[in-house]
Image (cartoon, rainbow over all chains, first blue to last red; front, side, top):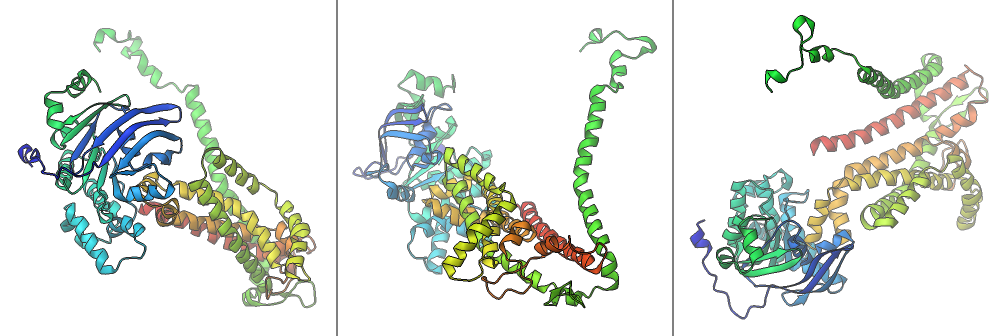
Length: 268
Length: 316
């Protein structure tokens, strides 16, 4: 896919609510403060890249959006995160709902040790009160796998273990399994860092194809990737947001000194 | 490196370091000796197994060759080694062992799995550490203490609760054995849960699974071979336990018909009768045949457990 097609501006309805609104978010791992009063609005229907050096808090911010951070047990937060207008840090029950609407893709592809079919339908089965009919499930399965361009490659081996797929296919599967629950936001934590260049390009193309249908927030270490595969870019440093602009502007005319130092490779 | 930097050459034109290569210094001898020591340690396990089996077999050998009626031993319902003519039907003992083990597992499996799942998946930090220590301490309680608990604590409770005359029975021994086997099973089961990669849990949680859904749909299925091994090793433990069962089971040499009947096990019978049997006599020898039977059963159970775990590993 050429750069030209990638930079086409999506014509989104103006009235759409922001995908994610972060307000004064501070986060501590035990006594260490990883985020300092982050305020950020992520627009709906576009790809937003989170960039910054290691330890700047970009993954932490991403992982706060579906509260997966709390698995660690020693995390405390202040401030709010609203996803589609709903406060993510509500009561216990809403955490499950949040994760249904906010899908996450991890650094290393992590398909469950189940068949390809069961992986794709896992989330959907969790969230439907009754088991859907066989025909409905097959339809969802095919649709999800077609959306990630995997259907033709795996349709004859849907009952094989997902862990037998190549890394690229596994990562696509990990995206596919988010789709049947109809999420509106996809969080991606360096989704290509475990992949070789060809697979990276394939997964990037896929992310770009999903743009518009989903609001995508993607953490990346890779400047080139942020530049070619995002509409907006957020640069973070030391747990704070330094700059948030359209990707073109950030790479062509960064506003802050730190931003230009980082994207020119002077540190990080 | 240039030649100028090489060490000065001694006589016969060899560099000094070449001579040093051939020196068997202390570290070399030490290595040799320690290899020998650890080899002996490693081999001793196999050696002892073979020696013990050889001993047991040799003590029962003459009986096996000349007078053993395998049909009577395995299916005979009367174990009367001291009356004339003696009866060596071990079915009551086999049945007693089976009943008590079954009751023990019915108690131990839910307890052990519950403990393993709680410690492995739900408990955190200090609480988890304390619980693990507790489980290990429980596993270290001597079996005679468990026997006393059966005799003096469980017996009146069972009599009171179920209104039965005899408090030393299959139920009592089963409960005691179940409690004894549970900690070791819990430890093995928790290891099996720990071996499930955390990325699976994270993936399932990110898809919106509750903690219990993660356990039920992802962790337990993946840990199944390890959990089966835990159960089998628990069964092996229950089969082999002697003194506690002897004290709690009532030691009645008849096939139990309900869990409120007293019963006798293979192990308890050997322990109770070996001291009284004349060395080398038929009774003495047939007890060793029972020992072989036990040995073979536990051996088979352990091998199966091993095979399940290994089979899984080689596939993964």
